[in-house]
Image 1 (cartoon, rainbow, N blue to C red):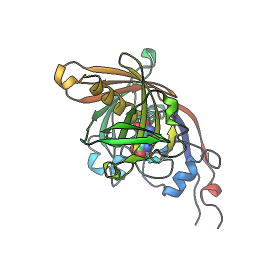
Image 2 (cartoon, rainbow, N blue to C red):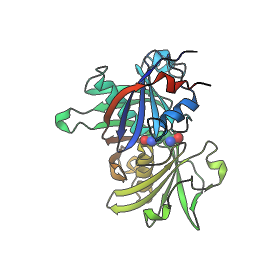
Image 3 (cartoon, helix red, strand yellow):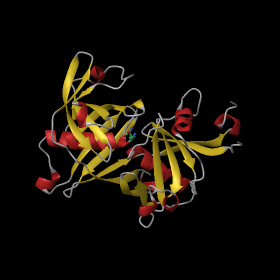
Length: 292
Ligand SMILES: N[C@@H](CCC[C@H](N)C(=O)O)C(=O)O
């Protein structure tokens, strides 16, 4: 079977990096094994994940959202697994659409497995950041424990469309090398796996985090994770916009930069951060389908 070359781009948001595969008609076969090879940093292009850019009307998982959002972010983790949402990814996705001339500055709706997300692309002369309305956090009841080596911490279970465990620690070094996923309990809290954030305070409504992402390992940033952290920090600090009627904003530093997260009195969460397209190229047809 002959394989065609694939056009790709590379981009990142706070150094959470992605292989971007534009495929408006959903005609490219992207099995998990190919996604994992593309995301491989030595044998492939390299990325924490892959953004498959498809028209919503052309994708079975997004057709029902096509009236609300023309484009579907078919997000994959670096190991080829599927995730519901990627906060940094959706900003990079919007930046790609803008760069390709498919959308302009201003407002845009993007379909994701976690629902339609509203995105605002700021004008270049006002910083050029991208703000995403991430929806509401869900905080399931129940104690969760995360451990690294001989240390363990209670963690807050926060669902941002995808699952997170947020642990406040004394020192980010206590998270260790994060080469492997930290154990958590009970297993029943996260039947589909979890993204784990380790958090320290930096100042009033200012925290820093490291993350081990489900399906990708330690990454330099996680947008949904930063939202989960901001909500967990606010509740720990006794701040609940639904009670006070006032929005609450946290600055969340990640190894790859800074995200600003605001929770509004109606519970909706906005995330603002950068999104950069780095390169564009073509994936060799022979590499896509190696000889048997
Ligand atoms: N890096 C992303 C999250 C990507 C999905 C995650 N690994 C999962 O499996 O839930 C972000 O910026 O939110």
